[in-house]
Image (cartoon, rainbow, N blue to C red; front, side, top):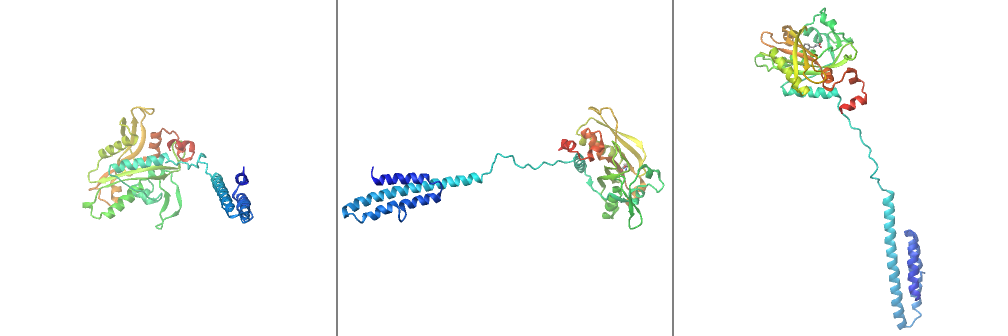
Length: 347
Ligand code: DAH
């Protein structure tokens, strides 16, 4: 084997041993550098005769090219390896479980609330809301409960330690019924001409407050008030409307509805609305759902309307109550404890 061949093999081994580009460049210098072994062979050519020079020169050139090829190959190899190492170092482990955002869910009361609104909207009712801190006149007086009327003691009221600009007591509303007054008065104001006034047809859901607390009473609870006033709205419309609502809300037809005579200052006649499922775990039990009645002439007058011309019904029902019935919940307080084990069942 000639010396050049040995040189090539030696270079190949050297290059192969270079672990990175810096040591490869050092190895290169040993063969192709200014004082490298191939360079030395070239310089030695000068001493040869012209004929020998040509032959030997071609051999050296071939060897040089072979070494350069080996060098380039190793360069490519190292570059690949370095790239690979870099990729590995920066690698993202796609098999790691991601950071999952916990999924929220709607509170069962919110679900009921939205469902109830949607059903009444489908029957042409507007939806309104109003202040939870109410004045004495709107919560009681306008609804036909005079100062010393027993109805005021029927509801244990949270009074606010302040008065409104007119010196009236302020309180946490004890029912959503004051929204009848607020909505009707605004409606009447918007439609100054009673002859062309469109009907008042609205529900007002919201929070209500009473000094009361046990498994079926919370000091804060939810009601939805209904009010429909026109020239010819009757108790039959009340029965039809509320029955239709219940069947849509509970998604079943085997529901009996009963109107039990009762007393409220703001209605005459007044009725308590009860419901009975004809099957299922609650079968055969009358369940109290709402107070209702034909709106009292005094209240119609307080709306700003003539009770000789306008008539209609109102009802006030417990949103918590119908939610408990829909989901089979026995303790109202569960709604307000924010225990995830409870809430997650509805998500
Ligand atoms: N506001 C009454 C209550 O909270 C319920 C009620 C009864 C509302 C009769 C009405 C009604 O609109 O007409 O006990």
